[in-house]
Length: 636
Image (cartoon, rainbow, N blue to C red; front, top):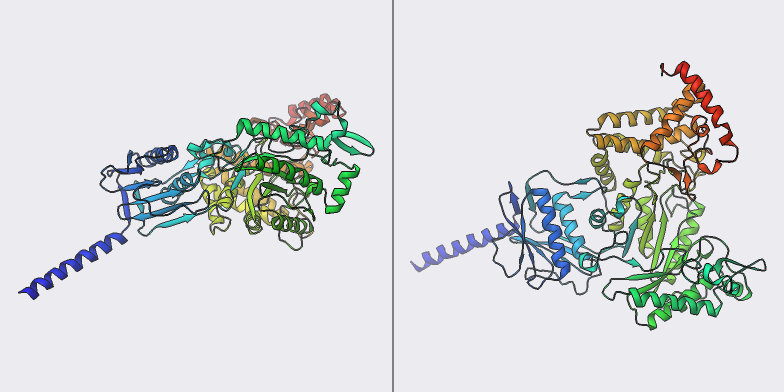
């Protein structure tokens, strides 16, 4: 009898154990038809950051599923369905040694935990959870996508752990300055967040070109102390400083320390002050500066000596979470041979001379190989290299800028060479010049900053195109593939001030016709007015290229009236989208006079020609157009 009881007891225990094991392996289903409760659990003595993260998660779960995810302390009784945030009793991971900004998502029986380090880790973990399990993506400031199902489940055994590849992440588009976009895409510089809601890496000074403009200002000092400024051809000029002048050093030290006394935040992950040359080539050639530069084989010799001295003063004053930033830009790009940056110095290496159609490690691209050499040298000398990269045509911003083929490999190269931060300077003036695919490019770059080695780069692009442009996004992917294939050759490169005649050097007449059809199909496939608007806005890049290259409907061989009328229609379409400029160049404003509309050539789009010669032809152009419009207008 005892043996039978023992056998039965053993059988029951075995079955219970198997059931428990099975339950442990089963997926965690939080929501089924919107009937189950979810508890967002935070520590009983939660920090403001943990409280804020819980609110962010609860609000978005409500938006996606239409349920109230109750925020409760970890001492409260719950019936399962727990999403634990921060250092609760459910926390499973020790974040004491984790890199700042790291996070982990882990499933357990009855729920999951999300933990993070530093000011941003927990919030990044929340948005990774939303992306991974709710398909929550912020594509632009106007387009947010998420799952349309009413079931949220997390596979048993889920464990996602992530540490940031780059401590500093910044892109340039209109959306990057939107709070939800910045949070969802892990940008930590564009939008100000207090430390309680994620924090940022903040520049306390000008972002760049601060010397003579913010520090030791030319307007304040040049009149009485020209010796503080650069010596060129025997004369002092106000465009740069004389960095070996000890009085200049003392002035800048005091100005920096005064800013830190006022604005320093000891709880920030990192704050930066920038000591960067003005945007010109007028470095000082006085005897002391020239000798120091010659000794170091680079004009960065004087710059880095100066910056190191300021960085020493910052460190001596006790500002342990402050770094001093300077450029390796144009004449300071080469790494000096006799001096190395202090530990609290950031070297911001700028790629302005590069080709952006070939990867940086392309052995056949001379400009890029030279840059890669400088990157390697700086990364060996400096523990904190940041990259200032360029993803924009600043001269002709409406032209296609087909660099999608290099974005991922270049980001990998930055990381592999020790870069700690990346700024992708793009179309920061989108509010006056918005066409092409700038938002797509920035979305992809923000994802690559989170993980340069992700295997779904192509799928990520398609996902964006379908959500922003609608079903016609598949045709736009075909167009992007086409122009990417034709953007460069071995001999022809892609630079940031490319002219129309240099753009798409390998494209053929049949490919131009095929591209026209792609855009037509994309417009026809749009399901909403917003999608159609986005397609037509991006199409401006193709229309502008054809117009400048006199292709298809913009060919003069189709007749003078047709030629004039197509130019006029394109100009009006560009303006209707709110554009008033065609490029940066300080700024290249659209020329409103009629000669540039009717008889366009690539040099007549911009307003700098006003008041010289071409404006005198405007009345003649008007009369010609009015006359021809009276004859042919109704037929067209």
